Length: 394
Image 1 (spheres, rainbow, N blue to C red):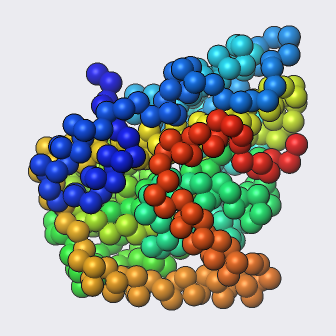
Image 2 (cartoon, rainbow, N blue to C red; image 1 turned 180 degrees about the horizontal axis):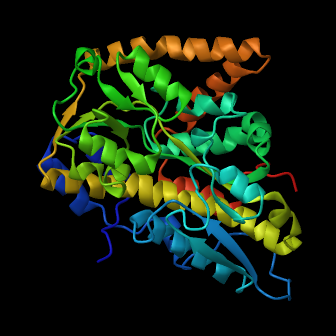
C-alpha cells in the first residue's frame, strides 16, 4: 500500500508535538496533499530543461551502484526517479540499478569503483572516505540545521564555491548532495535525558567531526559502516545510535530501540558521484537534462524521504511503544555549549591551512536562516525553473 503523503505544514505540526500522539494523528489527518515534487515525479508537471531531446542514437545505459536493499522505501523512490529520467529523455537514458553492493561496494571503495568505470554513477559518500576532505567535513558540524530542506539546499548552493575541488579530487563529478534530517539518539537499555547519561556510552559516529562531537559530549565514538550498525546495536557493541527518523526505520534500528531522544544533533551528508568520462561523453542535450534531473531527484529524496518518511517513521515508532523524550531547552543549551569547541577547532584548523572555513561556516548559518520555514514546494518550484549552476563545469 502506498504511504500516506504529507505536506511541509504537517511536518511542522508534528515536529512541535512529538510527545503528543493525538496531536500527531491530527496533523497527519489534515495534511494529505500531493507535493509538487511528486507531481513532477509522476509526470503531472514539467521541468524547464531548456532544451529538447535531439539525440537520435541508441539509448545510453548507465549502471547505478547502491548499498540500499532493493525493497527499501528509498530504493523504490529512486526507481521512480530513474523512470522519470528515462521518460524525460524520450528513452535515451536508461538507468540500470545495482542494489545491495552487488556491483561494487558503495561504502568502501565507492569513489574508485565510479572513477574506474565499474559503476557509471552511484552513492559515493565523503563520510566513508575522508581522504581529501577538508571543508566538506563542516557540513556535519553540530546544531546548525533544523531540517533536511535547510541543510540539503545549503550544501548544494555552497558546493560550487567551497566543496567542488575537494570532491572532484576523488576522480568523479558530483551530481547531487543531500543530507539527512538532524539526528536523534536511539537507545535500548537507558534513555538519554542529560549529558551525564551519555558519559562513557559507545556512540555510532561515522566521520571525524561526529566523533569529535561525541567526545565533547562525553561519549565514546564508534566508527562503523551503516550496514554494520544493526548488528552492533543488537549485540551491545554500540549503546547509542544517532540517526534520523526515516533512517531508524530504513535500517531497522527502530526494531531494537526502546527510547528516542530528540536532540537535533548534526546532519549526515550523502553524495552521488558520476564517472567523469561518462558525463563528458553525454550528448549536449542529454547532459543538460541529466544535470537538471539530478537536482530534482535530490528534492525527491529530501522532501519525500527525509521529510515525509520521518512522519511515517514517528507513527510506526509510536506503535512500537518507543518512548520519545525531548531535551528541555536549558539542557539542550548545555549540549550546544559542550560542542562549541568542536566548531571553533574546525575553523581554526582549516584557516591555518589557508582554507576559508570561517566564511564557509558563516555562509552555512546564513543559508540555514534563508531556508528556515521554506516549504518543499517552494524549493521544488525554484528547481523546476532552473537548476543550481556550477556543480559541474560544462
